[in-house]
Image 1 (cartoon, rainbow, N blue to C red):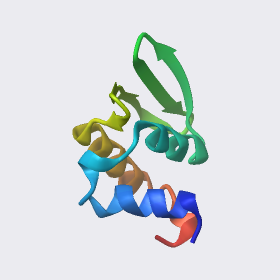
Image 2: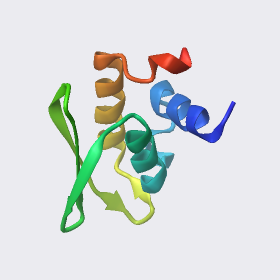
Image 3: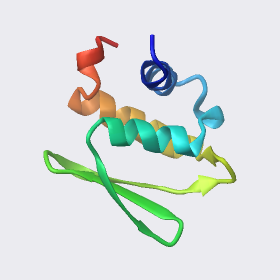
Image 4: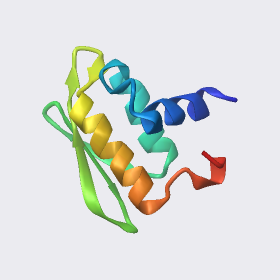
Length: 86
């Protein structure tokens, strides 16, 4: 299992929300095909076939736990990452 798969599983399991690195969360979103723009410290992720936008900000080097939960819910809602059979 590669680093991407481990990160995706960490996000999907929901037990490590407060311990996900912000850069790791960004790389998972990038690997899922999202594009982003930066406005201040806000990273705004969009994807053409998904209505919602994802707006995340770092707290030091970590991602905010509630934003990890939002990403997880979006991944589950749209079935993203299914090609990994997770």
